Image 1 (cartoon, helix red, strand yellow):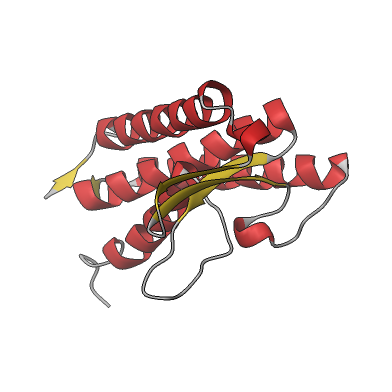
Image 2 (image 1 turned 60 degrees about the horizontal axis):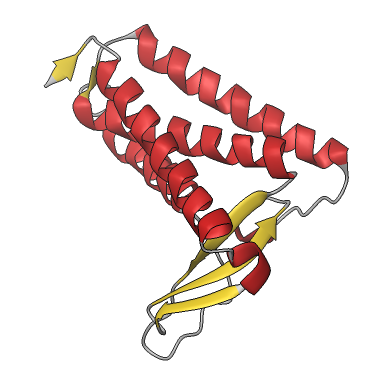
Length: 161
């Protein structure tokens, strides 16, 4: 089913952004994870491990300077605006709108972190089956990843070659 409205995308983006920022506020400020550094929730499957990520996913492209921070903010904003404009161009299915909303909401959530804290607040750490995961991530990271995968999987299906 194809819809012309961007309402689904906007709603998903807003909900993703709100969930991301609320989770970070609770974990960092109310649970004081920024000071205690680690909280075992359901080891090894779910742990909170505080990590201030100045780079992109998995700490890649770590840049300590303000130039790197503002460059990553600019890239995230440009991608978000580009996806929004792309979705406005022609009617999209609900799955495509949800995917775009996840990507935009997650990207904006991490942009707000970079503006407020100078880095992205990562805190989720999950391990399983004897494999110890050394990385932390957040709700926004999950949303950006899921949204990007969804856009790849769900766009262009109705087009003829």
